[in-house]
Length: 116
Image (cartoon, rainbow, N blue to C red):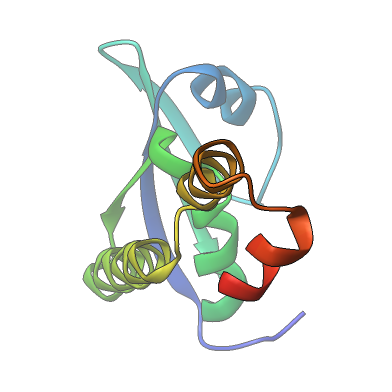
């Protein structure tokens, strides 16, 4: 665990994780309250990298309310993941292409492999 200066954190959880968070003791001095079916979780953390990773593990069911730098880092991580996703070739399209080549042109698997 990486120890840094204490960080005041506030996160809103929804869905399954609203109950999951509320049922556990995560941090000494934590504060949990419900609002409109969501759980607002306030606590102190001491490691920025671990905090970011932990928040990201809840996906869209967690919304960071504080601190501002964490909100920005989560948005940056999401953008990086989107860029990574967009840079990937769609494997399903390759499979369809191979199937069409094999059907339309009577190509063997070996011949199709040389084209990919």
